[in-house]
Length: 341
Image (tube, rainbow, N blue to C red):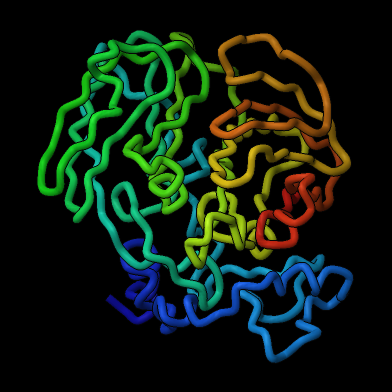
């Protein structure tokens, strides 16, 4: 394994080590709100050098103050490109999966490390996908020092609901029948719930209709915040766990190809978030439980754990910005681009 591959491995499994800053670098930062003071500085430079901006390393293509870790590259979140990494739900009447709880340092922005609680060492947890009516067995193992669980949204036997804490070193086999069709989150449901989810214990679960959905380039975008000082408020925001990632590494799609985005709001400490796409409108399938659009728009608002599937086709080459229309979220890492080529 060469140095580049080693650093990439650390980024997935032990990224906090690769960052070279440690948790002390976060807790030493001031509890005021320096990022807000940088709004309006076109280059993204900090007007007050005595205050360090979490994740800031200077200007970028638009002005977001937060940047991804230096060791990331364009393929770092390729697992969220569903058309290439997860083309369809497993075949057959049932399938089995395994999810492990791992508590570990995770780099979530440039020189920004958190003590994350993760499903399988990544945030969000890996995408789960099934066809409606399939029987799923999910073996849950808790390798951490705290009780955790896994709770699936959707319809299933209440005995398999996942609110009961699973003790450290223990395991449980969850058995659910996938349904209804749509996009459903999963997350830990052990109190204090906000703390467990805000530390990274969430992921996406897709239930396809029996015949599947029409062909499209599919991506999952899960919005969440990182509370760097455990103060009960988010300091930075991220699509798919890494702040600023899609500003540095835009989603690339061919002109004329249908695009399908599975979008979820998994933020804690913020009651609402939104998704806005510039220069393009889209069909909205609320929760994805219907096969006909609920509306056609360019912005959707989502409460906590709410989700939607949106579809559109870009007919002109160019850069299409996307972000929450809560501008402090965009400024702090949740601004990105879709580039039609």
